[in-house]
Each structure stands twice: as structure tokens, then as C-alpha cells.
Image (tube, rainbow, N blue to C red; front, side):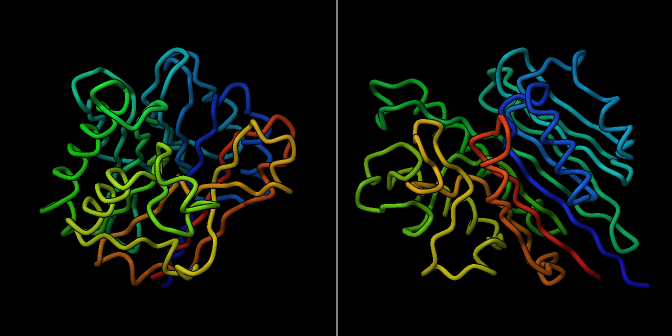
Length: 269
């Protein structure tokens, strides 16, 4: 029997504020699993009822008031929930679960990597140092045993690693999210566990690929100064089951949008 599963990742920039467009997305695209970042919502105030009304009975969250926050919302049962505290700061930036698939399960990690502030120099910008330290912990975590089993990494990793993941490689080389120290570290994380960048499996390196457009642009669509900050990686054992991805660019133009858009991936076995 064939098993098909779709999952999506989306930095929603406040789940309660943007619940109307989340509901629209779930109704129109109906992923089996939705991973959210930057929910900006303490656990007690999370809108469980709205998700369950749409058939998403299984919800695991890690939230904070006004900051950060990640959530995994699913039609399928979620098991072995883990919430890791990176850098010992108590930030809600990671949650992992096991998702049933193909008679077994895969491990799903949902990350919200720190943005890193404006100045790409840890000696003058503590936020940038935090970002690099967070990523160093990710590198250790996602190597070895974690990379040897069927697993997925999704989320707002806040780094656009490749030349065509940004609107201008030259213009952004000194801008946080595309500096060499960040892009090289993210690539070291990915290659350290031999993770597959599934989005770039389906979109050639020579093509522009964005998931984020700044609120500062008067006409984000016309300016098209985007970056690919949101990612989907799979381990070598799971990647052969990938059947495509979709970046829902249109969502950036929805009413009261996030500055990120959903990315959808499909699995089949």
C-alpha cells in the first residue's frame, strides 16, 4: 500500500495574529503536518481549538510570550516529543517529534534559528554571536546518529546559503543572513550529516529561490528582493521518498501576511 504525506514549514510571525491566513492555507492545501516558527505565543494561549476544528488533532508546541516559538500541527499522531534548549538561553527555538510514515516513522526537527541582528561581528553584536553559537550546537546535534535514520529538518534557519538564494549575492555579502561565516557554517551543518537540501533538488542552483520578502519594500512583488531563509533537509535514507516541493509565493500577498511564505514538501513510499 502506498503511503503519501505532505508537510509544510512556515515562519508565521505571530500565530494568533495570522490565524485567518493559516486557516486558509490548511483548507486550500491540506498538508498532513504543518511546522510553524515565530509563533510569538505562550503555550497557554495557543489556538489549539482552531486547528482541531480543521482536523488537526495532534499539536505540539514550545512557546514564549512575544518572542520566538515553534509548533508542529498534524493529522497524524506525534510521538517522542523533544524540546531542546540551545545555548542555555531558555528560548523556544526547537521542537522535534516522530511522525508515522510507511509503516515506521521519521524524525522531524523544527528550528527557528536566531536572526543575528544587523552587524555581522560577534565582538560588537551579541545577537550575531548567539546565532553562530546556536548553529554550532546544531552542527553537533545533526551529525552522527541523528543523520543515520530517516529524518527531516525544517524551519526558518535565517541563512540564505547560496548565490541565487538572495536577490544580489554581491550586495548582500556583508548583510546578516548571507555573510560567508554564516553560509559556510550552514553548509558545514548540512554536509556534516550528509543532509539533502530538498528544495535545491527540485530548483536548480542557477535559478533564484526565495521564501522571504521584507516588509520594508513598498511593492515586494515588483522589487522581488527576496531571500531563501526557510529550508527543508532530509537524511539520505528518507530523501529518495521526496516527490517535490512548492514555495507558495502567493501567500506573501495575502491579507496581513507574514514576511515568509509556506514551503510544502511531499513524501511517497
